[in-house]
Image (tube, rainbow, N blue to C red; front, side, top):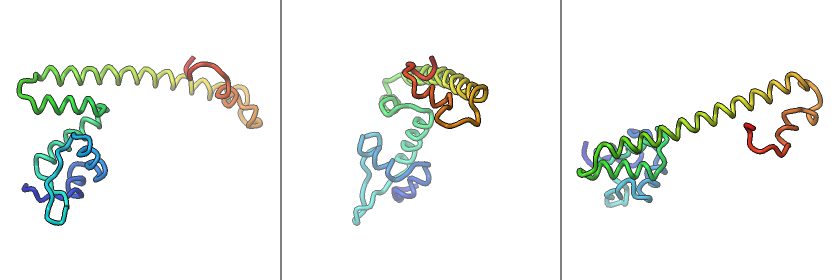
Length: 143
């Protein structure tokens, strides 16, 4: 593939959008592209590979700064694979923490629904235990 990819073609082939590509260029995750005489951006195989890498990192939930760190590992032959592993391990810890939070949220929502079913289902809306609970000053959703 030569440098004949337009931003639209790059977006389609990478699974990204043109605004996302421009954003990644703006924040320095993607290099600024060459331009044709008419000012149109042109991209090549290396750009497609980099963008695909960034998109996959984002699919795994890596924040932009961690993506930037992973890109730095790719670009620096003196960096170790351990650096990438550590970043992935940190992301895994965060995902597991969010899963635990979601399990608590699920239990709390299930309790709200069960309370409604047991105490007020079909009654007047303003008397609903779900609405009462949501208006209370209890801290957090999962207390």
